Length: 207
Image (cartoon, rainbow, N blue to C red; front, side, top):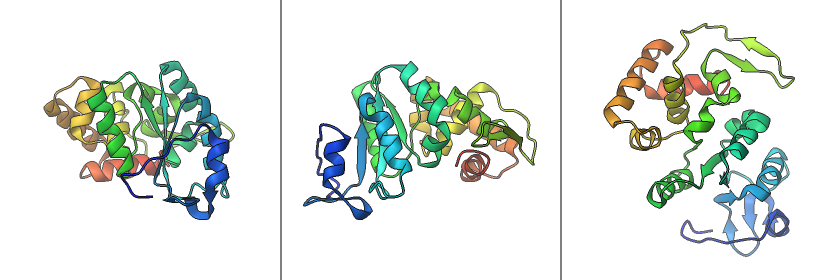
């Protein structure tokens, strides 16, 4: 499917009827990005967990209106949302910001709203331990100074590929302040730059 093309389907059943192997849509071409609403969120997550689900490498996103719904998704499916890089898009943003985020997701970025970055799966990855599938915590073999809640938010957004401008806008900070937070994060993690900080995040529970 050409990047400028779009197709609206009523539900996941309609999607699955048209899906071919490797994430292609019958008569349309490659599925590049799929955005689901709240009613199809859990179905999309389940489909993305199925190796034969047919989604291929499509970028996935869930648009939600109620923040408690997003938090519930992170608490229940956080590890998979992070590893599969399923973006969670709040609908209470102004249109310009929302379209910028969608453009970032379509281009290969991963977005999780700052409010959801405080959830346990994200903070577990950031603050030095990760969660096993059975729910048991394991110590990080490299103990690190805990980040502040704000630094944790910035790292989570940085690791999902968001530029300083969007991080600043979402957290109501200046870009200069975001740069200062990133500088402190880099120092605490013992890495050299933001890329290495993002790699550290994904290696310690964010993947």
